[in-house]
Image (cartoon, rainbow, N blue to C red; front, side, top):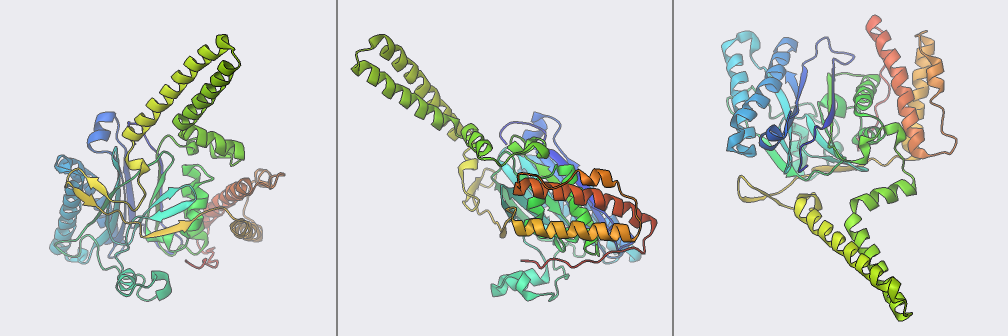
Length: 441
């Protein structure tokens, strides 16, 4: 992200099925011009409040309001210092409210902030809300859960999921309960055109697997994806509030309408050609030079000389383009685990990717979503909930059997049905599904 271009993003927060109040909060503050982008960047943040609905709601709202403001206030000190001070001062403010008001004792909130700047993506994090980066068919978790189960897993070297439900909901670090707090600052993570960043509360990740999240994001628009993700969490019980922010970095093929995206070999070849045009240009120029040599050997000088000059020009353009691309985006050529230099601290920073998941669309995942769709159809008919069945019929499986298109259509069909289901749930709150939650990996 070396030049200013507004990112595409979508946000959604939902109370869930079993809670009476929404203690989650979120905010999006994209830069409005190139100067603001260069100095502050685009800011996105989620928070999950704790301590009773009125108390938790107050803490989370304060976090998503104060952290962006304080970060912008201190950003002249550098990203790391600004994020650390923003979280620390917000923590002090929440703690003071809790100390001065007995009814607010114990108030707290998790918070995860994403800053997209020219040099990459920065993350400030406290608690068990999460940040992910979705790049192609890989979902990468960029935050460490400050929970008891993740801390035990870190100390023992065991995968957190292998510890079962052992103190899974016990948070060991949050904003508010203590006068001081330790903040995780991660970054700058390399950013490529088309990357999607996800911020969410644990109301989503407790019920929807990262592999599912990545597959859905890769076939739907951001607005449709956040709605479907929230719907899936609710359909699987919705025991907690659910908040999702999706941010797509401009410039990738995903900027096109998802319905018109193609995974055909021709489309992949075109994408490769556009990304590596300097190399292809040099190869084409070399081929033209060889052809001019052949003409020269055949004593066709009227053809060989102009072709040689043209080949030289093509090769020169390719070399210039290659040098320009290397100098313009050095961070993009680095691997995700390679150290990068923080210009503010003038020392290498180790980038942490805590987990990686493959979100490739498979026939098994398609079958799972077909089953979800059929369950929805059965429930809607059982409870006589009105649905636009003609619109639903348009989401038939593609005749050519393309797996990606079939999965996209199933996602759109589930979204249509879940929207109808959601409207009926508000009219009749006793109608609460609790379908089997997929096993976490």
